[in-house]
Length: 101
Image (cartoon, rainbow, N blue to C red; front, side, top):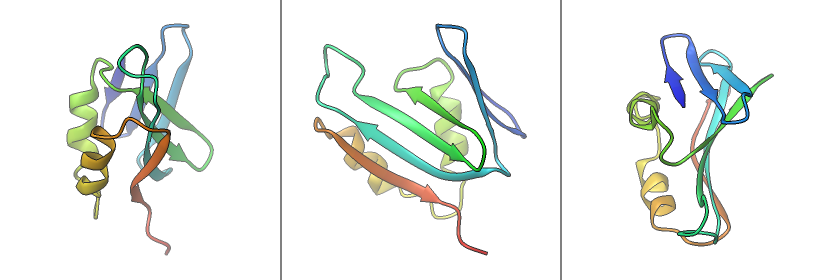
């Protein structure tokens, strides 16, 4: 399950582990795909922070809200998202990186 709020993103995994990254700390948004679909999970959001991050499988409860918020990031690459959605190989797609100050 994914919870999105003004502070950041929290992912509660089935094993009880809770991962969190704040918007202020977010450094990159990447999608990782693999060749296990449709039998297994083959699409993961990777939210990388300075000190923390979240790994979120496609279809997680709250993913629609997450996507809506991610697409508001400046220069979010929707073409990378589209390419990842169509991919059935072991690849990574960078959708956003924080600009250097």
